[in-house]
Amino acid sequence: MPSWLRYIDRRTLHRRTGVRPDQLKQEDFARYAPVARAFAESHLALLQRLPLSICPSFLQQIEQLDSSFPAERATLQRMCDFLLQLAQDRLTALTEPFREIHLSSQLEKKDWVQAPAEFIAELTAELWSSGQIDRFRAASVALFAAVPAPEELPDRLTLVVLGQDATAPASTVLRKVGRRGVTLTALRAEELSSQIFAAFRRHAEASSEPYAHWYVDGGDPWKDSYRTIAGTVAVSYPELDPVRIQTLSRMEQIVSSGNAGAEEMRARMTAMNAQELGTYTVTADPVLRRFYTELFTQSSGPQIFSTTFVQWTGRELVRRAQPRTLLLRYAPRQRYQPFNEMLREPEPSSLDPEGSLRDAEMAAYYTWIEMNRITAPGKGSYVVWLENTSRAVIIGNGAPGGTESSNPMNLEQALKQFC
Image (cartoon, rainbow, N blue to C red; front, side, top):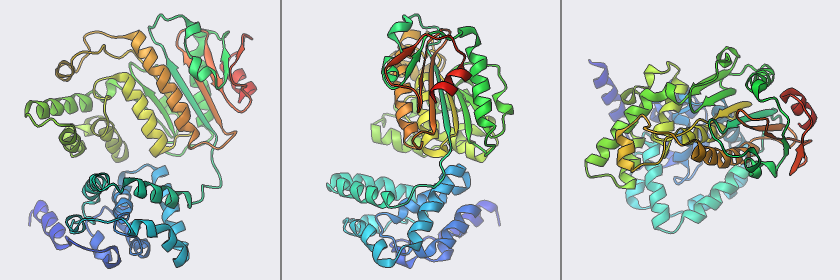
């Protein structure tokens, strides 16, 4: 029997519509990948106790475990194990608000076990249209807040480089992040890239966990050998051109079809996979393959603007990989043009360094906010350098906000003094 026919038979065999969580069986997860299947089977007792309005959200995360980052796996494991150990009355109290969510009969009949993502998309639309979205959010916040944070949180170092080729006066830049830390004005610009590499390497060498350290570049990356540092992933916008250009081509086809509404575009992009976008040509790693694919199919902007790519990648890494060491380097993006022209021209016709600097400035501030969500107090160091200048901002436990230092020092000395 052909392999594709065996797959269809197996999927049909285990396809059950209108199933309630308390009716779940181990065989319902037969088509899941190995890690996901084992996890679902070992946590079956918890899944059976969850309301239908929230159970598919757990299954969506479980279904993707084989291509998830270690941090994502650990977060899901900690949450499920905690809930599984709760007394029945405590779990009931946390999940009762979800049971009060009214679902349509059409939604209840969906095959949410085999297609949790599709169920969640329809559930979200139904929650909005029925006015139940605020109740659902409040219930979700309460549920996740009940899960204790890890006892040990690592030190994190974030480095942001921006302003490449921009000519704006240095004194007018980095004001927003500057209010949160110390502005350094006497760094040696010609040595900063090598000092950043040294700081990255020193910090990363404290942990060799896979996917724990990241260098993301919006243009041609520095020549320093970041990839040789254990646990480090280095990726650049040009390196992912095959995936980006193929995504743009698919987007143009959707626009040309006349069915280019926002919801239609989003649904069709989300359905794109690594195979059809050629992500296998840039990496053989299944975790990175999924991550790079979703950077372009589940976002708005990275397909066209390099600055958006760097910001979006950083945001998704904080949310999913929870990096210990993160370097984001912005490069000039293309100038704004009519949308259809930008779809047809994957290579920028002209660059906008000044506009890119303003994009990156705001993005640097957002990155600081996002890193704070996963960083314990006193365990985070944050540096923003205006490239090719002597100016940088450093935020840390010993960096008084809104101050300035004109003392000559290198980056290592600054980190020791202010972080």
